Length: 289
Image 1 (cartoon, rainbow, N blue to C red):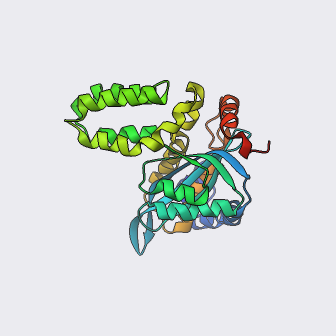
Image 2 (cartoon, rainbow, N blue to C red; image 1 turned 90 degrees about the horizontal axis):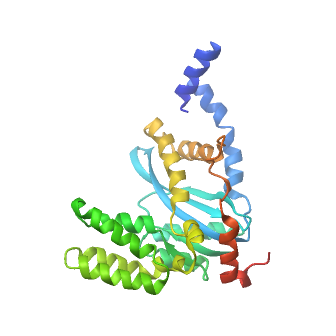
Image 3 (cartoon, rainbow, N blue to C red; image 1 turned 60 degrees about the vertical axis):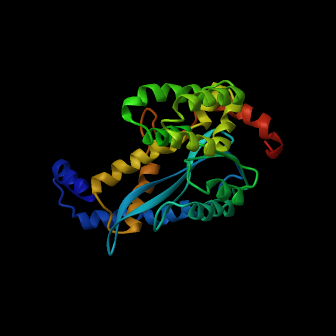
């Protein structure tokens, strides 16, 4: 809620005259807690980490679009949590990500099995710079969305099922065969889509080594996008933030909000035991359980 909404609620329900300024000062008590959270120690190993960025409007002299970088990790116990958030100063870039991932390493994250992200250029190098053994998994949802941007809407009913055949293939070899069939059918009409998939292929295929249940955990940044949807909802209520600190305070409170009946940002990942067993078979020599 905004400070104005809280003030109006207190007046309506309790007939209390509480100014927006006082509410803002009271809410500032969370800043020390937020800073402790941002600097706190993390687990040594995270099997899966999801990274993404969203844009919020922050006044810095004038109102500007600022990226907020977000990292969500799944622990060996299957607990989902936000590991870090940072407000950037310009457009999203792999160089900035390398710095923020290094900060996570300095807070104790020595190893990550898989990092799932969008197709940002240079992201693989940024990840390997921090965690040399990590596998970079391209978010399939981002890849499909990017593909559709290069195509006519009238062709989506043909293209979308054809792409689904590729990313639901039972094996890497089957995916390759289905992609070549896709390229033969659509390559002349949409060469940019074919180039996009060929370029992204090394980061696209890792999750195909696992069965359907495990793939649901690995193949998409939906976990973090649902968080970003909450962030955007909170940001829209305000339009713009007066300072970077005000923006990060609100986003931190969104992370900490607990929802009845599930749907909280933090919590246990459904079906994690099966995913963990598959990951341990692949990367078990890197884990002291």
